[in-house]
Length: 226
Image (cartoon, rainbow, N blue to C red):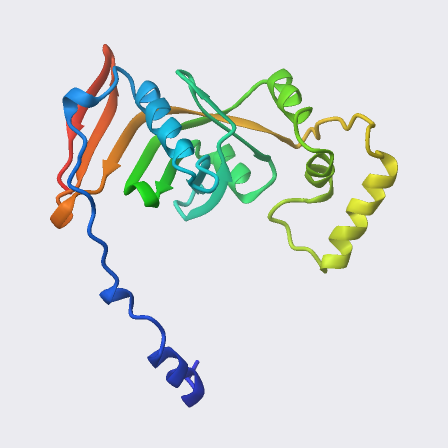
């Protein structure tokens, strides 16, 4: 498609991403500072991210790929973690749900930019049990419970009105205060980590990148070039 002159003029005045640079702090991350497992180290950094006032420190980019290898990414909220893995919830019929059904390999990225930190998790996703899903679903706000039923996530919707009509019908069926069951097509995934990289920005782009890798005897730590 040709670029019209008005579009070209607009493009000529947008901020230049090549000129955007930030200097990171000198304080880094050393091997001797790490916890014994990536989950313990994540708990440390997650606590610091939450204390720093970062908006939604539990927001993470979840990347999946379908059976043909076509990738897709989206931001999802982490809802639990322990030494078994990282848990998030979604519609199983969504694009990520369909991807994971055929290819359970997944990547999680926590982008804590104000701290010049990232955590990158590589692992395998498995559905959690229905009891665990139901227990979490009961803690969701009433409107979010209805939304899980109203939205056929990732499917094409004819209009905003169609979506709101479906929600209104559910609100009439399940008024505030009435228990809403967890949809059978909705639930949690637990990502069991195979590698977890902790990235700390440093001066002159000599960032610290320490990666835990799962082995038969536990966790090994390796340093990656920035």
